[in-house]
Length: 193
Image 1 (tube, one colour):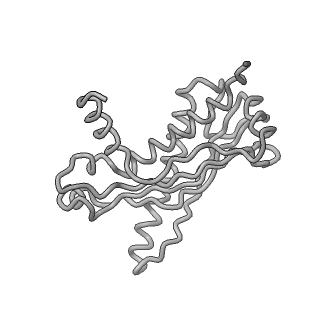
Image 2 (tube, rainbow, N blue to C red; image 1 turned 135 degrees about the horizontal axis):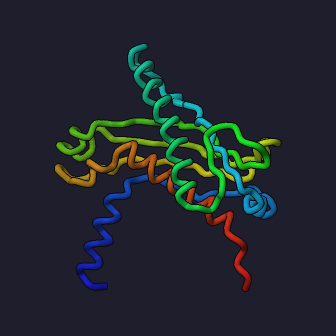
Image 3 (tube, rainbow, N blue to C red; image 1 turned 30 degrees about the vertical axis):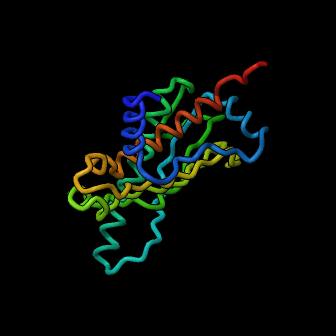
């Protein structure tokens, strides 16, 4: 591999952060095939689900406010990314008529961390984002697929610029794009061999 290409690959790998974006996993091939049958998608508000113990009431309240805002932002970003794929003619965050897919779930961890601390030390002030995304039938509630996201910033050398871009918002946007891309793949007609 040419040295320039290798350096580009290393640089890109540093931007991604630790953890996993997961894949949309269905419970059975029949359910996966069902996703293709939908033209409408409703993205519901995600439910905050931070179970970390807080040292005091002030920290608990601060975390609750952050994760509540993060859950709403995640829902909006997923809807935006699904629209951008063009795979589904109707995408909304409001009530819609059936049949429709419902994208919902929980935001389990929303930790903004501290960008300044990461830039100075490389490891203190880690940002983290974790969520469970469920795809189900709007009427029946039958789960068709799910995706688990678990992302966090890497401990990098002091002053590494990639630690600055590894924010909770960056991880949330990556996850929303993954959900949209995975749904678009499931919506596509099956490949004929």
